[in-house]
Image (cartoon, rainbow, N blue to C red):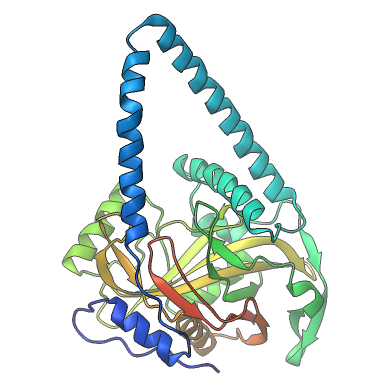
Length: 346
């Protein structure tokens, strides 16, 4: 079994980029300098564009013809954008395999992510109740293999069909998938409940305010909501979390799970990413308090596997290479690094 997650420190945890770089050095990866200038350059560019557009908009709004032209232009742009979103959502859900071309994949996942956000805002969020009964609309079978004690596995020739990376809303890739589970949604919920994990609450104004207050006051909230993450343009179906001893809401383990469109011998295939919230700090993109993850996401994957194996019959039946050793950043701008391996559980 790969290396384990370090024991959490007692008291407040101060996240820093120096700790991230030292962890990368231990893993044999070169540290990456934190470059804030692209973010500030983008902010200034947006402000400059707004300032430059303001005189033209003011002049156009000063007479009837200009207002009419702006209105029709806005309708045309909105129509084209809706058509693009519809195309991207339908294409990415019907595609046998998401294109590996970076630009095409980013465009498609951006459009599908926008639709997913719309669905999210309508109230169709990640929910343990729905996850227990959810099934793929058009399941695609994978070749099976049998491992020790009659445990089901996925043939290596078909492992490449599974989704590999979570994505930002822009379509840019984030952390790779690190866990795969063969079983129903009810099985997934039962396994995590037996190991002492909590399913995250739905995001509502009440739960969001409670999570914010608990984070500021450092009080426990075992089933606090988590921010949505995308996998091929789809929001995660259910998220599980577990706090360290002491119950601090600032430090928590969590795993987000997606039901894929694949089945193996009629068994559903789930994919997940895992990360450890190491502390709370100001966001790099927006000056708001958010959780910062520990950069060693492989250690969190190992922690999830150990906790599940210690509480139930679930076992690691396969180790799959999802990507080469890599480092990157999540949507919040936090660094992560991984050796690129995922564990298949059954």
